[in-house]
Length: 278
Image (cartoon, rainbow, N blue to C red; front, side):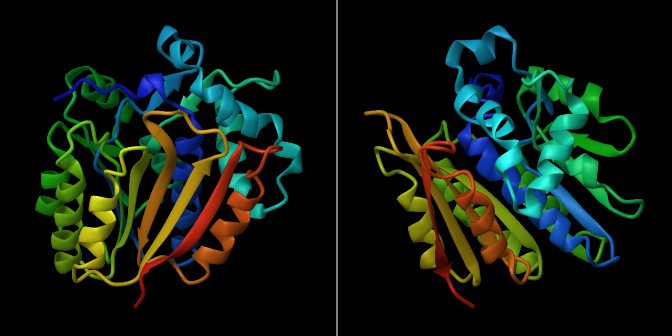
């Protein structure tokens, strides 16, 4: 099933959480000079037009990145600066954002000479746009990202950061992600893995957390944001699992999301804890 298009949801509250976690992990890992292999399992089209008909149809960016941008002067944590810096470089300084970067662009902005980025995308039109965007610095593979990631491990670079974020439009994705993570961890135990998932009224996401709690992977941090005024059906929040987070990541990430929580922020509350300790 390939019906999901992220253009309808780009820049929503879940993207803020996901890309805040990604940029923080990137920044912290790059305090060491050794090369990093980056993998983006469900890359999408890399860049999104917030003025497109798809974006306007849902209006989700209004309560997400547009709200964040309006409040940027109130964000005191220095860890927001890479996020705000990229948004500023991609957009004119007119008070509103016209363009939102998908995860491959966040990765690409951090690439150093010895780092490598591999982006997977199976959707035909998304994959074509991704390939046109990529240029020489990014390897694009038009294949299933979960299977593709396992085929690329262990990388030749000494360190690893992988973002795993399928749409979960197929219910079996929750268990497939858990199984993929467990196999990837066996191949590369020192890697840092970021796993995004939706928080739903149906509670389907519990399958993923329960499978990982019962499995062999250790040191899994869980971050969940919940809408203060959730819909009666569908997505009521957003979750991130961070495997092998850099030391101090938990406190710094909590500080970032605390600044955008509550009625004055994105209308969310944030919960952070260890799903599986060391």
